[in-house]
Image (cartoon, rainbow, N blue to C red):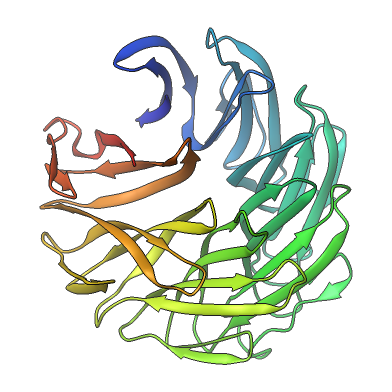
Length: 379
């Protein structure tokens, strides 16, 4: 089991076998997405910072780097900066059968290895494919004159799914992404499929009169592409209109392998709710999110304490909640990441006070650093 904890400007990566610490590595910079490629024996960690990241100076305020660690020893195999003339952020990682996928956003000119792309406006999204040796196979830019970003990547065989947000004038591989309202800078959501070479296979969009945000994307065992997002007011997706019950609700939407829209559902109550992560487990998905007040999940009513709480939920392709795991506490709780594990899933949780996960207790973090609470949830 591998985990990452950031304290101040240093990230510690730890590998454990049961309760025994196998190794740990310290990297300069704030931690980001983490992935494991067992076939190549790599632990892939992203860090970001200004001036210096991991072991080298970088341009951009901030810039990011992908560090490949040996899965057995924790030693650094290679390091690849994602440097921008203005700034860059890595928000998503995924392991493909023949490489590594990295998604994020940047402003100005982004250099990754020998590849360079330039943003068309305020910020653009990107997805890059790397070899397991850290060489850049290709990089795809997405965007227009306003703020755009890739916030989720997933792979299944040679199929690659990406998802994120965009505003008016954005395009992907020459295909315009129509904004719900071309006269406003508000962001809509998109989901797209690329082939192994980075060519666009299909793209779909969703949105409304308010800003949408995207938490991630997954491909389940049936080949369906599933997006997790947070929707506000009325969201138009796949020819249907869904209305959030409160200021924001979680949105889960499914597309078939042939790009046809299947189904979408909202998760939320009368207060602000949303989603922060998604992963596929067999033919269903597990999402993580946050809520305030009371939230109905399947046959359970969850009531938040301490302002807002977090949750995990398993959904089938019809949007039915199969199982739910509430995360409660007097501080702030957040599902930071979710990934599949043999027979289930593993989720990363951060918390600022004592908390419980479906009734199981978690101790409070140190009084000196309330933001240092972290745990792994395995189901």
